[in-house]
Image (cartoon, rainbow over all chains, first blue to last red; front, top):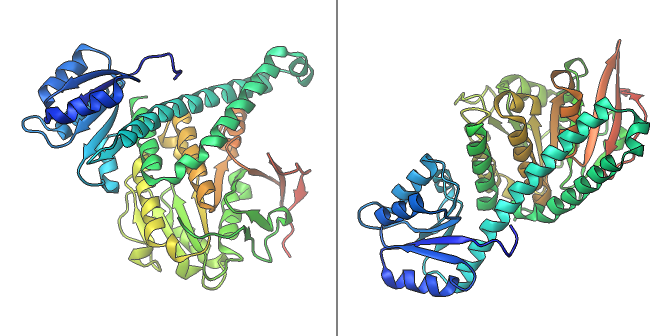
Length: 196
Length: 225
């Protein structure tokens, strides 16, 4: 994702002061929409494209967990950070959210969470592109002679692109050191695999 | 963060001299036809030369925990048996004979990618912290591909390879070359630091090495001392 593309963040919390606080922190950098309960959140999600949802877990009526279930159940194309009072344990990764914010949130923490989510989306795209270029190269290697390949500008470009993507992935390898990062990546892959 | 070593030593009788030591955090792919039995080399690599304070983990995607364990026990250095843990992805919930319940983690299916990850993190939390250095064998990419689409399997392996690299583990992976198109094999090879290719010619098993940081070698015979 490039800087110029606008990112829409939906803030969901039954505490209006929290919503206002988040809005103030985020509105300079992102398009912000808000909802004060689960029902309203689902209405927003049906109405407009949302990239990231900051979702309070505990709300009266339709809870954050219920909203999350709808988002994952309907395979909506958005990332979800749960705003929780406690650090979730490993099992909670199964629930289907992409990150979490521990209360009380800080301005820096919220920005970091959103930046992580966007980077992760990028990384998954980089991996997908890497895979598809490698497959393409495999086919070329299979079907062309060595001299055809060494004369081909297109093949040289392909090799270059593959090398640059590999460097990018190497740089981001350290992300996998974090448990939640690692497991969330696996969960996303599993979800995608199931859809295919 | 788990303590680790700088490099892992293969056992003294390991027949591939180029792998006598492997840098910590490196992932090695052993690829060959079943006749050349790449897995047996993998088991020897994780089971041989282990210092008492290293951990060993086998992630079996093929549902043959029992035979893997037996083979492991026959090749492991003394002390190796006590430190092996198996993540069994066949849905079986009881450990094979000879394995303590604490050394056994069960996952419903090879397609339960998140659960494999959770089991691995649980292993690290409960076991790896006791060890300095951990060796992991994942057997096999071929079995994974029976359950998961190729592009997603690629991402899954990439995540684990990254995880092993950052933790300083030794990652050893196997793949049955006869089960896939050449092109698929070469695509997956890109994820690994070292690739050892095996082939069997009449009675002789031969191998050669390739890799980003490894000099390629010609085919040479595996000679057991």
